[in-house]
Length: 203
Length: 241
Ligand SMILES: [Zn+2]
Image (cartoon, rainbow over all chains, first blue to last red; front, side):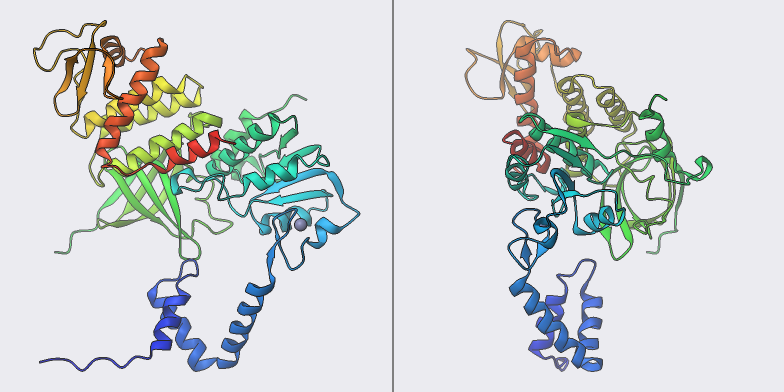
């Protein structure tokens, strides 16, 4: 006995397939999202479609810092109040936002949009190290501050950027790490505490 | 068909690699002493306040506990064992390379206790800043042996005669060293002294360093059936910086 095929709409299938580009979205969640958009929230779906198209047409990478922007340069790179001799290197726009929130840094940035990840085949070309090199050697920058994550991948990234820039005579520093502010040793994880011990400083 | 759910407690292990999974979780590729290579689901490990976050760090000895007996087990505990220096700089890249060798070549769920100990020893040596070539060649040799391709390094595979340090040999991956005339013939042709040095883990000679690197690369390349290692191509790109 042959079963009657389940009726489908091609547009629905394409939407489900397209939604799977989102991180962490498998076939099941993609289907749920598609039903939600087409059945329960068509106005929201329309807005999503329009803003996605708009973002794709207008958002690009800042020519100086590589962060997302709509113009040639982002507002931060265009600002005259920033110290243009300092360049802080972060992995993501979210990291840049965090450093900005501290209000204790007034220099410029470069956003890698990733990190070296040798096991995933992510190399220097994928994170624009050639563009970083051009930016860091443009004559304005005097010190580069490496604020990549304290993961093995972030450390490897920091190491190679440091090598690349030091060999060209640029001063390079790495943000310090250790026990969090207000952190009681009893509740700090062992990895952090062991790093803090190794990187202790004289008083 | 339903296998009983197993529980593994405080197993000495290393994180080889991890991948984001869903919104807040991680899939950990772990290498444990008595259970071998295992995939573990670390639920909620990417949450900002996750207690596992600062612990699930590659190249550091951990004690892991998990349940399940399928393809993907569930991590229920991770403790920091400590005492291992952190890998830095080129040593860190070598660590990634060693991890990729294990991920690509070691089948899952096969215990390899001797290899586990050799791995831990290699990381400690890399962490102390020992010359990387010796550490890597030693580990590669160990890995091949664990996979069933132990190298014959002290005798001629055809005659059984001791290796002559001055002669040249073609290393046949199936049989071992076979004497040849002259040193031409690619990475598989090396001098006898290289084989003897590799056997004794002595890497003082520049020729040994060079030849053993090429030989091991060719032998490992055979086990990879022509696939290229990600870590190797990233390293090549980095050399051009
Ligand atoms: Zn900018």
